[in-house]
Length: 497
Ligand code: SF4
Image (tube, rainbow, N blue to C red; front, side):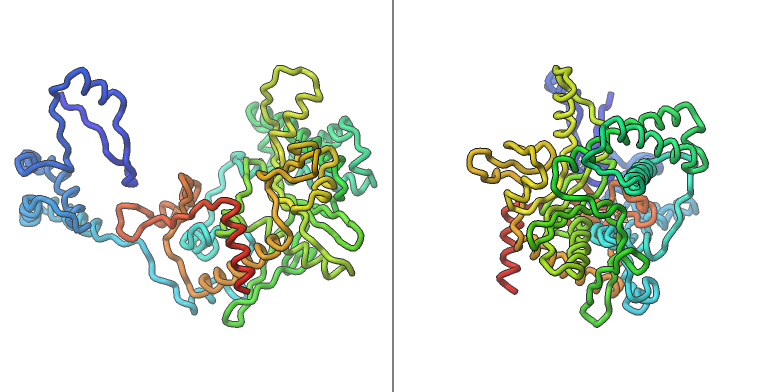
């Protein structure tokens, strides 16, 4: 009996043998172990049996040869045997093998002329487009250059749920505005019934009534309502705790937006116009200063990592904040200042608590759905965002000591100057991206941070054929810096300027 196991997966990543292999080794200490990779000359010879069986081994050894690895010369003789074989089938297979061994999937740069023709000037880019370029220039080229359309299926996928929640919150807030209601005066039962009405309006119409089409989708509709109610409850709860007032929902900036686009001058005199849509913006005025919070609603778990912002993987919130700062600074006499940037998670989490009292459960929900993001390092401002803060905030990613008003060290906070310079760094980064994009870079070069790769949810793997076995197909490793390290880099940049 032969028992075999793979040493690596299809991407070349090491695999560990099953625990059973270990058990077998212990049960039968005199078992013979051998590896195709570490075979001696005699074992190589034993692999050459029938043409069909030997072909499989020959291809693996030819791969080694193509990669410049040392191997038995025997396989060149085997290769030669197939090549000289009179049967056309073998000649055809050897032809395919040679093509495969030297296959290249990297495309040369498009060149400036073609890139300009493809993307047209001035480049109008959304933040998600820039983030896509950072993650993989080739995926960006496919999505925004070639623009293949995905076949539409009559189904409800994750992006649909996000869209439904955005739509329901948008309509919910529009009703509050139309009816002249005050967020802080809203009772929980009023929020619930208003959200019920909004959902009853949206769900039957959505995507040709798909949510009414099966029992499964009808159940999903009920779940969506429940999650939506939880979201508006939490939204109102946050606003009640805060002195910040929502001044806009779904605020668009861009050529056709409510506000003009952010203009980024590129090195060669060209410009890039940044467009986007801000889910919510809150404002608080303190004397002559106007503080701005930007909030983005997310239906999935989304965390904010300063290191990702520094390396351009998470640009959205900071670009949106810059759009609002620019806009408000033009409008007011005083100073527009950053307050915070946040992801607001839309979910109805499972609470595991022995307490059955409503207040205790609500507290747990708040903690589970705490805002993720970055807050200005100003204790008075933090108290203006959460008037119930005592120690760790239930709603913000910060903690404040009741004794001496100091901000806890592990809070997600940033000094104002660091905020400003981080935004400057990001604008400079975008300027460089824009130049690179217009020079036609379409490299297959996905990012990898820890275990997370840009390829994970990318629908274009069939087009790029990214394969670690190919010599010039490699991940771009993105480091994970600690907050202090990012702050150090921000300050260094400030000094350099
Ligand atoms: S699968 Fe990976 S390498 Fe291929 S286009 Fe997508 S992100 Fe880039």
